[in-house]
Image 1 (cartoon, protein in one colour):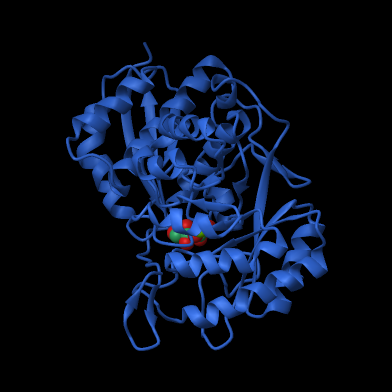
Image 2 (cartoon, rainbow, N blue to C red):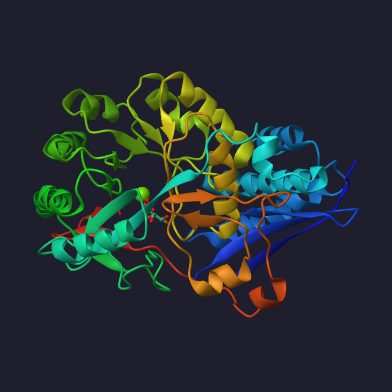
Length: 403
Ligand SMILES: O=C(O)[C@@H](O)[C@@H](O)[C@H](O)[C@H](O)CO
Ligand SMILES: [Mg+2]
C-alpha cells in the first residue's frame, strides 16, 4: 500500500491568499489539495494541521472513500465550510496520488472523458453598461461561448462583481472589511437594460449569465427572472440566500429563467430539497468547498436524476489546484453544464504550474498523471500570508445586509 508518511499545509499569497495541502507517501509520490476558504483561510489551515494531519499518517493513500468517511463521521461535528474544505483538500490530494500511481490523469479514473472539452464562462464587468458590454465583446473575441455580465449600479458607489481591474476580479480587498452601500430598487432597475444592450451587441449565439449574489427576496428574484426572460439567460445565479431552500419554489413558479445556486454549499444536504423538487437548473457546488471530488460526484449523481446540471464555482479564490480538480470532474461527469473560469494573476500561475489549458471557449485538464498541477514551494515562500477580508453590505439607512 502507498502509506501516507507526511502531510503539510502551505499558505502562500501570490496576488491573493491560498491554502494548499501536500500529502506525501512513502515511495515519494505526493498529492495536492486546495483548502482555500476566502477570508477565513487560517481556520482551515489550523483544522488540517492540528486535527486532520495527525490522523492521516500511516494510512493507505489508496483508500479515498474510507478516509473521507473517517474524517466526516469521525469528527462528530459534521458539515460546515471549514470542516468540508479540509476534507476536500485531503480528498483532492488522494485523487492526485492515485492518478500519479496509476499513470493516468484523474478524469480517466472517474470514468473517462464524456466530452471533448469543458465549456467555461468568463466574468465581464464594468462600472457602466457600455463598459461591461465592451468587456463582454472582448471575451467573445477571445473565443468564450458563455459570458457572465456584472455592471455597476447607477447611484451606488461599488457593487459585487465590478472590479478596479478590467480582467481580474478579487473580492477580498482589504485587511478590514470594505463597507458597501446597497439598494435593491436601484439594482433591479439596472439589470434588464444591461441584458438588452448585451443581446444587441453580442447577438444570440453566446450564452449570457448573471449573479445576484444572494441579495434578493424571493418575490424580487421572481420579478428579476421574469424581466430577464426576453434575453434568454443561460442562468440567473444566487438570487436569494439559499439557507431557505423553500424560497426557490416561489421564484420557480414565476419565471422560466434558469436558476443556479450552490457556490457556498458544502454538502449534498444543502442542495437536496432544491434538486429533488426540481427548483433549480444548475448546482454550483465545487471541489474545495463541498468535500472534494468524492462528495461532488455524489451531489452530481443526485442532480442527474432530476436533469439538474453542474456549474462549478471557479472564482480566483479557488486555487489552480481546485481548478484542475474541477476540470477533471467536469470532463467526466455526465450531467455537466458549464464551468466558471476567472483567470488567475500571473504570480498565482507561476506558483502553481499546471497542465490545464483554454482553447476556443473550452478548457481541458491535460493528460499528465494525477491532477496535472504542482506547487513551486520556493516561490510560494516569497509570498507571505496577508489578512484579507471580503466586503460587507449595508442598506442606505445603515442596516446590515447580505453581501
Ligand atoms: O460567482 C462568483 O464567482 C462569486 O460569487 C464569487 O466571486 C464569490 O463572491 C467569491 O468566490 C467569494 O469568495
Ligand atoms: Mg457567484
